[in-house]
Length: 182
Length: 182
Image 1: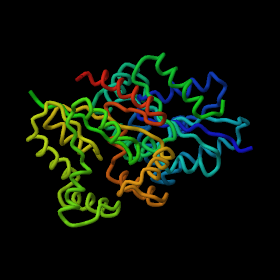
Image 2: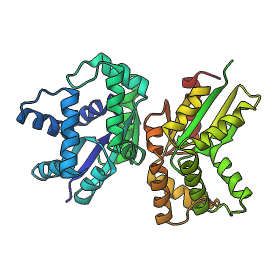
Image 3: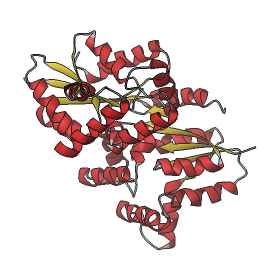
Image 4: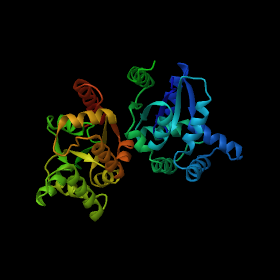
């Protein structure tokens, strides 16, 4: 039986990781595309600042093509025993296609407005989170330059994360029903 | 008092016109960016086929810039007596900015999956609607090449239109509350 993949996309601060964790507590294995980048930063001895991670992500794609990170993930997932795997951090339609060529996929975009996302990111303080509006907007622009927005616009499902944690949980339960794998 | 604009964006077949009509029956004036293109097709004696309308839209933007259609709409809206105007058919962030420079704006993306949108478009048979999957996908690609997906990803609000007409009405009522102008 072919593995099934849930592919999560969305802008920074939209709530991708929160959604991924909801699946994780239900026993779904999670592979994070950002972790592949963070792992490479560690190997190269680079601190995981937004600039370093952004530069690495761009560099890998420039060297290995738009789908280079996705291909690294496919190798990793092939070795996993799980029937259903969630991939967090999809950034382009091309990446969706790479996974879709090998696995049965359901792509999910998490949406929150720029205003909401900025408020969340500045409150969170993770090492690769921007603390200033200019850095935030530059990151949005960088992500959009990877055609991230096309992956959002062409997603199979979209979940909203504008309101409370309870609202987001309702969206998640609804999503499980729509995907139909659980 | 500055006019307030509701800017509607979304892929073909997502339900932009349906949403616009919900505002229209509440007394909101509607300006359709597609109508500006259809008006030009009429002036030139061209039948409003998807190919002609697509070529005209591309041509206007190539000649007058990405914001050429938006600027034509701004002129039109300036002459209107209405306090609140809805603009249907926003296709890029640059267009959002053109309206935002002159008016107070709230941008709204209507979302439906590609599968749902294709089913709707083939069932509808409007003159500029594609009847084949290849034409449909070419239209999606053309719209995405105008950075339509960036306007979707960075919208202030998103409304889902995957389910029933009743679900979409609920989304609409919720949107009115969120915008807070009504």
